[in-house]
Image (cartoon, rainbow over all chains, first blue to last red; front, side, top):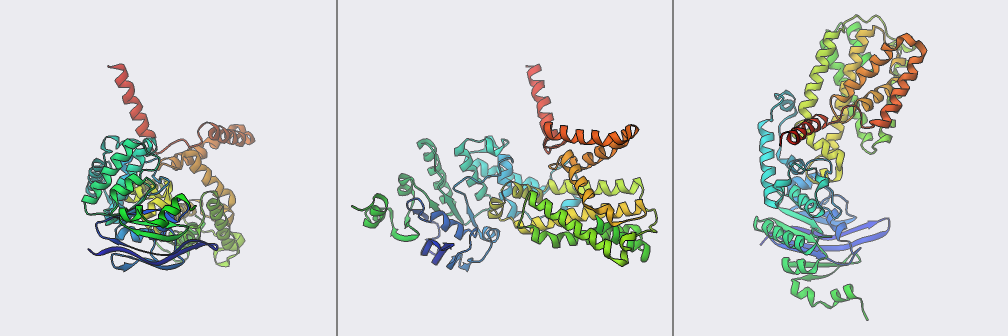
Length: 254
Length: 247
C-alpha cells in the first residue's frame, strides 16, 4: 500500500524550547495509525504542524506525494486533510446542521455574482445540495435528530461527534482525530469506536491521538510513541505493549 | 465615506461624469482602499481594529484637509444636487438585498464561522484571509457609496464632515441597531437621526435625551435593537404559545 502522509525529520521549537525533535513517520493509506505518549510529549504540536496551523522549524511534510510543509491550513484542507481539536472548536452559536454545512465550503463554488443576483426567500439549488449532504453526514454520525439544536447546547460527547461530522463534510482522504474520546464514559467511548471503524470502512485514513489504551490497542494497526518531543518507538500494538522504552516512559524507571 | 464623497464630487464637478457612474466608481475606489487597509488590519481584532479604522479615517480626513486639489481647508463646493430621497432608497435597497443574499449563501456561513472560531474555519478549507479582506473592502465600498450620496446632497464637502465625531456616530448607529443583523444598522441610523430632530423643541436639552437613550440601551439591550435570529425566535415563541393554548 502507498504512503498517504510522511514526515521527514520534522522539528518544532518555541523560543528555544524544543517541542518536537526530528520526527519521521509514515502513514499507509487506509490505515488507522495512533500516536500515543505522556502529556507534553508533543502529540498535538505534531497535529498542528501537519494541518498547517504551526510552521515547522525544520523538516518536511509530504501528503499525497506533494510537499505541504509551507501551505496554509485551508490549502491543506482542500487537498484532503481534515482534523478535530483536543479542546473542542465548534461554531458554538450556529446550529448543528450549520456547523456541518460550513464543512461543505470547499465543495461550494457559486460565484459572488450569482449569489448577489439570486432570488430571495428561497434556497438556491446549491444551498439545497449542501444541506442534503450535511444531513446525510449527520445521519452517518448519528446526530440527525439534533440537527436544529445550537451546537453549544449538545452534550459533550455529541459535540465531539459533531466535530468529526464537520471534518467529514470536507470529504477528507486523511482524518486527524485529537483525543476523540477524552472525557467520555465507557458507553460513549464504545460508540466512538464504532464510528471510527465506520469511517475507516469508507476508505479514509485515520491518524489519532489518544490516551485511552483500550481504544488504541483495539483500533490501531500502527502506533507511534512520542516522549519529550522524540519518537521512542513505533510498531504494531503488540510490539508497543512489550517495548521496554515505552513502558519506562509511561511508568518511569526504577 | 470621505473618499467616496470627495472622489465622486471631483468626478461630477471637474469631469462631468454622470452621477450613477461617479457613484459606482467612487464606491469601487473606497472599496479598493478598504482592501489595502484590510491587509494590516488582519493582524488585529475587536476593539483594536475599531481604533485602527478610526485612526485611518483621521489620515483620510487630514489628507483632504491638506490637499489643494480638493480645496484644502476651504472644502470642496459647487456640487450639483443629484441626490434625492428616491435614489438613496434605491441604493440602500440594492445594498440590503445584496448583503442579504450574501448572508444566506455559503459565503455568509463561512463569515459567521470565521467570527465564531477562525482557526476551525481555516482548517475546514476556508481562506479566512481572503474573505476577511474582501469583506473589509465591501464595507468600505458601502461607506464610499454613502459618502458619494452625501456629497451630492450637502452640495459642499469639508474634511470636518468626515472626522472622528462622524466615525463614532456611525459606530453608535450600528451598535444601537444591532451589529449582527442586516436591519440593525439602518434602523439604528434612522432612529438616532430622527430622535434628536423630534426633540428639537427642547433645544439644548435634546442631546441629554440622546445620551440617556444610549445609556438605557446599553443597560437593557446591549446586543442592539435587532438581532440576527430575532424574527425566527419571535415566530418560535408564537408557535410554542399556540401549542400550549390549543392542546
